[in-house]
Amino acid sequence: MPCHEAPTVPPVSWDDLPDGIVVVDADGRVQVFNAAAVKITGVAATTAVGRQLTDVLPLLDERGNDWWECSRVSRNLPRVTGQPERRLTFAGSQCERDLNVTVRYVRVEGQLVQVALSLRDTASRERLERNRADLVSTVAHELRSPLTSVKGFTATLLAKWDRFTEEQKKLMLNTVNTDADRVTRLLAEVLDVSRIDSGRIQMRKQIVDLDLTLRRVVDGKVAAGEATHDRFAVFTDGKLPEMWLDSDKIEQVLHNLVDNALRHGAGTVTIVMRGTPTGAEVTVADEGEGVPEASASRVFAKFWRGATRGNGTGLGLYIARALIEAHGGTIMVGRAPGGGAEFRFVVPAGAPVFA
Ligand SMILES: Nc1ncnc2c1ncn2[C@@H]1O[C@H](COP(=O)(O)OP(=O)(O)OP(=O)(O)O)[C@@H](O)[C@H]1O
Ligand SMILES: [Mg+2]
Image 1 (tube, rainbow, N blue to C red):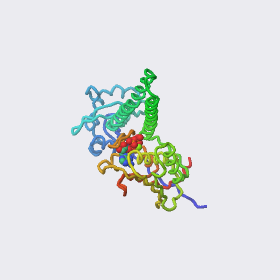
Image 2 (cartoon, helix red, strand yellow; image 1 turned 120 degrees about the horizontal axis):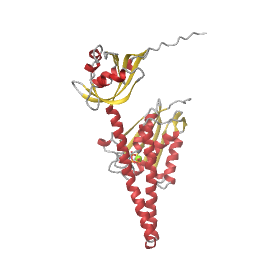
Image 3 (cartoon, rainbow, N blue to C red; image 1 turned 120 degrees about the vertical axis):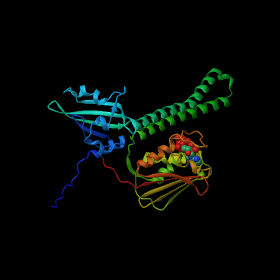
Image 4 (tube, rainbow, N blue to C red; image 1 turned 90 degrees about the horizontal axis):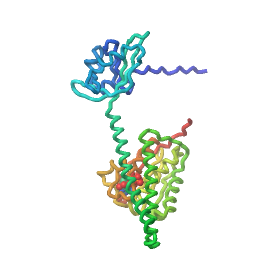
């Protein structure tokens, strides 16, 4: 029987860790200063190792006191194992920045031998928190206008039901209906965005017939009365390989591209699917105004809407890009031969995933 030797895996080094790691001895002399710590503080490892922590990494608490000095009492208490994450200011000679610092005490028979500090830059977390706050305020703002209309029309109808003609009542109820749909759509999109932003997209790959999926999307649009069949020209160029994709997510992407072509574009919507050496490519083109070149990189941004804003929230393409990228594919926008917008995505054929 052939004998396969297990490959030797090199041990993880301090430099492989994503957090800044600083290890000092009981007297505060630096023993380890990993690559992430160098990146966060701008202090070279060769400068730091062997020197006193208070010299190379002066850390101040919120009152401006020297943290190493202030934490002496807790270091000397044998049962204390460390300090939970807290924000300290690194007051370097070149720069000053806030760091989230977590501390562990290494003791041998109750005697302190080492102190390990993990450092995290606060900037990226603050950016994330700011993004989240922006999302909340934008969503609240987006919800306000349809809800104001729902409330306004229903209140008016309830108060003055007899004073309106059948036609006027129907018009108001139609508006209420459309606005309620808009709220539902917005909430579904926001849930998708939250799943994407927190890295919780779950892929369920199966063999997908792209042609069939696309026809389902087009038929759905026709059934909903948003277009007639003659607005679409669908071509499949050659034979597509067997595609392992998340069927619902690909349908969602196609749905948004087709929906955009109908709502923001004009004329015939031409959809072409073709096989590539590694998967498939799909283009959705229309004959409208198109996306100005200057905006091409922004159409995929969260909440971005151009002049043709219509009823949308500007989340469709952000979600579409994330879903395509979750498949290992790419999506881009360009100009269609007919002058309108042309969205093109490529997805690899993929392979079954066995859990
Ligand atoms: N085919 C197109 N032609 C012209 N402009 C387009 C086209 N597709 C998208 N856009 C522009 O890109 C913007 C962003 O599109 P996106 O799909 O992300 O949002 P939306 O359609 O406005 O809202 P929704 O979240 O409901 O999809 C649109 O508001 C529109 O201005
Ligand atoms: Mg859209």
